[in-house]
Length: 248
Length: 95
Image (tube, rainbow over all chains, first blue to last red; front, side):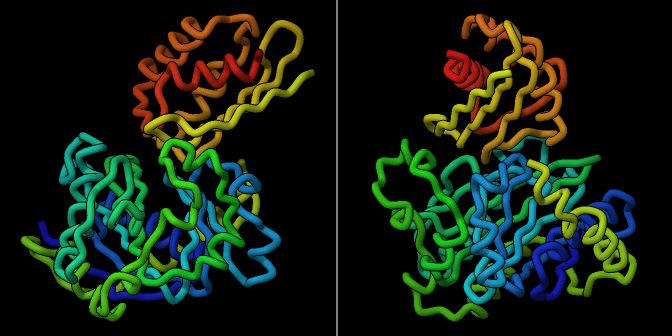
């Protein structure tokens, strides 16, 4: 199986989520190959899981004041602050049969690619089921997976640098969320590559690309015109629609 | 109509919030939110609808069985909470 690597690009939140879905549709229709993309967020954004209640998780007014986008994902999981300058996000979009039927195993498999990249830059990290990667007990990467109509999609983040002030201004992180982790402060739960290593963000991206593509036959090419047209439709009909964002 | 809400972190799992509306002796609306995963995602609506009509006095064992049946019948995979976790939250909300 040949994989496609999309060039790194930054987009607004709604378009980022719409691109994932447009690519998944194209993979389902065999119009596009299995795809790996790394991307950023411009402007910074908060994404929430598809089952979360927006107002419980996000200070929407504070987001508006700070110019932070808000988008609801089609995947489950928690609310994430995507710093425009401090994060690399990935998506793996592939026919489901290539990843096997076991959901937990496939989380572990893709998280293993992130762990390989972190190892390559000298960081020892651990997979913490269901969807976290930690360094020294602190979260450095999270992800979420969906499987729709025979297509596997997992997207996730790798934190490069932290803007805790903005992160905890826009997210309403309740004490319940860490109640079973024995940690007093939520801020003590997260870390980032730049706090632990001297590598640049470009070097981190390169290592991630290497580990995700290792042992795969692949080529790099941009998103097709049809995929971008479909993504822009999905911005209008779903990801940029307040009705979708506020649906819970 | 009475509204009940319970929000808790499932031990070893995810955040689970249950909001129930009660009219007389029965649950009339169920909203389940949180950072869990359900595959396929549309399964959450099936779970919520399947719990409408539950007697407010139903015990946690029967509630758990009811959740388990909905999950099995619809071929859902739930990560982050179990049927007993959801049943316990519903029971707590109604108590």
